Figure 1 (cartoon, rainbow, N blue to C red):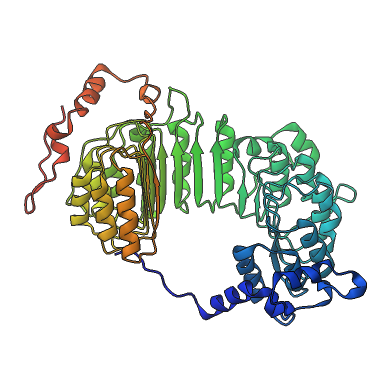
Figure 2: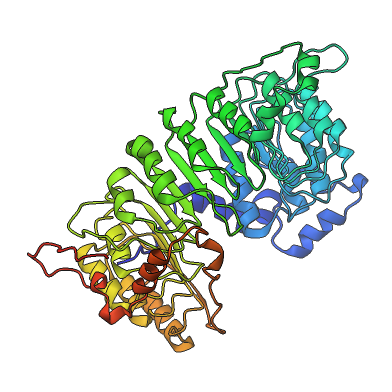
Amino acid sequence: MPVKPSPPSLKRLCMETISSQYQLICYGCTSRTQMNQLLNADEDEGGYLDIPGPFTDLPSSLLEELVQVIYDHKGLPNETLHQLILPQLESYKIQMRSSRHIQTNLIGQRCEKLKSLDFAYSKSIQPMFYTKFFRNFPNLVRINLQGTIIDNEGFDSIGEICTQLKEINISHSTITDAGLMYLCVNEEDDLKRCQQLLSISIEKTRTSAKSVAYLLYYHPLLVKLGYENFAPVFEYFHSPEFIKTTKISNYRPTLRLRNLMFAEDKVSEEGFTAAIESCPLLESVVVHQTDLSNSLLGDLMSISSITSLHLGNSSFSRHTLHFEDGIIPLLLALGQRLTSLNLEKFNKVDVMQIGDLCPHLTYLRLSCVGSYVPVFDLLKVQFSELEELELLNTRGAHVFTKTIHQIMNKAKKLKHAKFQFVDTLNDEVWSDILCENPLEELQTIVFDQCHSISVYTLEGIVAQVNELTNLSCWSCRFIMDSDKEAIFDEIRMNNYDVFFSWYPFTGEEAPMPLDDIEDEDDTDEEEEEEFEWETPEFFNYWNHPPLPGTGLVQPGLD
């Protein structure tokens, strides 16, 4: 059965009590009226700022946790800030439901020892503020400026003062090429900056491939660099401008990057090949929405350290990557080491081959698949290490019930599952899966517009012995309002610690058409084969697993 509530730790209970009785514990006020009198008192009369609070001797770790607990319960009202933002703090996050002006003033005045500072999505702070502010923190190791409005001079201060910086997130911010260069070098004396930097994220910013290339040039020890498309970055290394600036005619770096992405833009052969050759320690590769060819994927076969692949075709109708010619040879070379595989916008996907070639997968995501190959062997032990599965049928392809069985029957370690537009997943199929695999480690599951399941499937999941904490059912045709109440009642009556999310069915949203995924060179024979796959469920041999004790007999597929 799902998880039941467990008592919080004594430390947590103490912090929650401090939060609920804060005025009494820290100010001796028994009513809000007394607290308001302190807040409104003149400086001569002695106000709340003259009371230091009982937390001055707490270590940084406990103080950081207490701040978060109080924020979760009641925000951070003004009377708490000067008692909680103390000199021993080493990590702090600017909170939204509190005065950002008071928070930043106190941090700037008191917290010189800060090693981690988080401003994520603090868009109300003026861009010029950061320039002077960051000059107070020479010991910063980690900075999060994601989604902020910051000018380039702010990065000049960071580059000059924060010499120990190892991680910075500036994705979705207003940084430009000039700001990125401030993190690389001082233009006045050519001194390099932030040489301990290991991780930087600059996705969705106004930076260009040119400035990212210089970032790699000045920081060759970078381990993680978040950027949308590395191909033009490595192309720039051979441009006349780069050669003139660095006086290096044939720059071939050996980098420590663990991740590369090629997405949403044109990917050249020169840039892709150079990127792969320059990163011998590569662990994760993302290639999607590009015009990359099957032949170029062969360059990945020589990288023995790759453990995660995300491959997908472009958004156009003509697809340059094919499952049989491009993906299978790659999985033959890398599959034994892969733990994560994400495939999108492919035709004729063979899940049995994926299971054979990638025995150690812990994460599998199949999205926008046009068709599946109907070749199965349910007696094979496959996907035994799988912990997370996403089957997103947004193109409305026919997902054989045996496809689901092939993936889930032996996935005893499955913890997270999501199904979208999988209409062949019905009560009977789910019951058969649970007979083969009770999913005892299941924690979260999402049914998104799966119109063949009923409340019996949901009741079966809740009644099963598992570790369920989150059950989601979104716009499924046969899950009515009364069914929702029945599931809520079941959870309440048994005191399960399960979050149940339900949205009513308001009208079927048609999946994406298959037209834009069909290969242009498909023959008439292949089209007839596709037509044959659309056999009604009750006539389809592949959706009837063999009886116990009988072997699988593969019929002809002509």
